[in-house]
Image 1 (cartoon, helix red, strand yellow):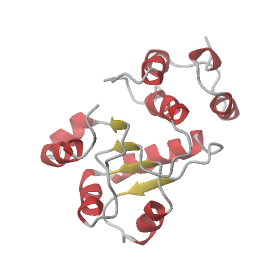
Image 2 (image 1 turned 60 degrees about the vertical axis):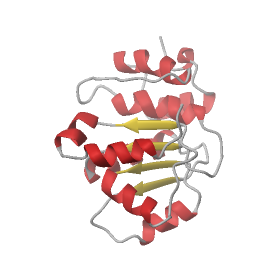
Image 3 (image 1 turned 90 degrees about the vertical axis):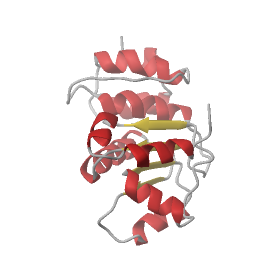
Length: 173
């Protein structure tokens, strides 16, 4: 089986081929069709098995140019948030989508610019995301897809209240 037979758009299949991916990994084979159908998914796989592509590729497929934040990916650390955003950017480079990367420890300037450009996809750590929401820089009312990457780690790090607040600010599906 290849990426084209999973139902991904031609642009995404071409991007995957350009990145040297030949066949989907087991997590990708399992996850991509479920996400394309719009169903919820809880997935687990070891590091290096293609988990980010397993959720990023079908998520990008489902998005069209919209200009409002429709995808939110939460990560427990700035390092993981950066990695996720880079993967979304690489996989979706020819789709014309805007992205914002939000994490603490840096000034707000670049993040405000990204949000002001109409981010379709926001990748964030919980604390900085709540800061932006509290300041009125971002609304989660149009979220269609919520990705909680390494949610077990977020909970272990004490983010349960923040994650709960964020989920409560998204529309009910």
